Length: 62
Ligand SMILES: [Zn+2]
Image (cartoon, rainbow, N blue to C red; front, side, top):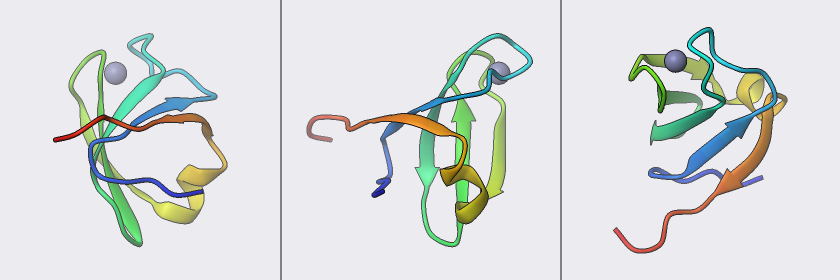
């Protein structure tokens, strides 16, 4: 599973705000994600997040 900066992750579990998609701001050992619903940003371990990803949407271009 390859996640790149700028990708949109569709999560299995919804964020408390109701959105289930997250924008990837940073990848690596720790991921920085921004909820597309409420704009909340948070860090999460890469290993942990992989289990919760339902779908990865790659953004075209930059
Ligand atoms: Zn949210």
